[in-house]
Length: 610
Image 1 (cartoon, helix red, strand yellow):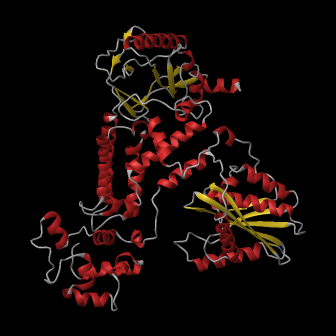
Image 2 (tube, helix red, strand yellow):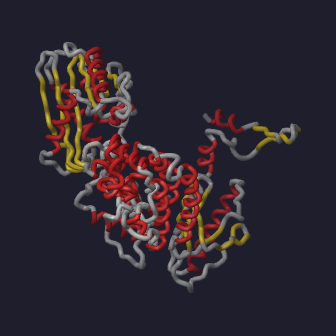
Image 3 (cartoon, helix red, strand yellow):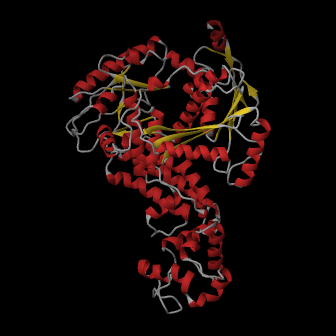
């Protein structure tokens, strides 16, 4: 190994090419090959001892070649003395290892709320380091008084610059629809508004509101709604969470992660009483507040992260266990109707796993809102014609994923104990994520249970589509729901499960709405009709005073969405062409895609601008 690494670094030469003229070759005696796959690892090994070289009372963190050193003292003079010791030690290390430190990029910052505290000069190799009011580390800007205002201002600037992308992608009558615009926002703009939020989420409300205004503007661009449209209406329609809720979820997840690390210094502070010495809340106190707020619905026992790291038996290594994560010619539900999916799946089962030669094991899992009161359902069909069923409660705090995995675990146990002579067994499950996790060796206990079955039978795990009328799958789903309403035991959860539960609690509930499948112009018309914030006389007069009267041209009542869609006599002819029979307003605004298209067609044929 040593000789191999040495050959990777030894006798490297380089030359410069300018205007097709090449310099002579120079021997490279320092550094690692730029862009080399092994280079980052070798560099990290080289500087690994730097942090341990720091004197007592000094903390240090190293990310690649970015080093931050800090200490905490009551007086600035004491802190300066200690930091000078650390700087001297750093300089000595650099000289010993022939490393040059960029002193122009190095700086010091004194963090204090006292205006009387003054920082002393710290020298690195005889060169005084500049003192900055702010320090940026890994993209987060720390200001002297920890108000986080500079960082938030920078985040706002970056995000607003990216908003121009949304403006160029769509107008009110043309361009990308809501789904595409939402994806662009979530992928390129929102990350700027959230990066490092567990550190700065306790900033003053006025600072955080500047970020909220960026998201509000993005919501208007995504939906095409008028400026007066309530933010909550746009959040509900797009299922985009308020930033404050997402910050709370990230704080809770980070706190849970720290609690799960047995040796982390923050674990003690998060688990015990701590005094709040500052006017503003800290991360510790904010996480404790959220923990109390969600105590009734969140698990109180999270397993240490070390307990999740078990040696995984690889289910795919031994012959006889086969995992199939697809059905030929079956596509996603939006592209293929349920009848076709059902026919293709049943044909596959009959052809590859005939009931005369295979034990069919259908499993399913269920949890309320995908995170509470889990249940597992199992239906076993034996070649002789007899069946066995089981409903199992899987815990008060249980995700759909865990319930699905538990269903397969229980089913494997039942099959192992069965005296049926059939040699072949197929587990038919609609839990694609569980099968993929098993394929990637992420479910060691389930893999072990299947290996036990493998000792006496041939084992196949076959994915099947859900909710398309496959009798065995539908029955397993019913059994899982029965298990979910049984008495649930209190259970511990892993950190990954706790993270899923927290995100699910914060995630807005979604309902099927064909609005999302329509064109940009149709979506803009619909949201304006639904919310009542549109360019009809009633709204333009009352909100903006831009219409002389709220009354419709027919003179009978105010010109609102309900009036023009249901009662305006001037539009009777256009209405009868689109809706020959009486149709409720709810159907016109929230019905199927066909009904929504009728509504937008009516608006166009009537010559209305909403």
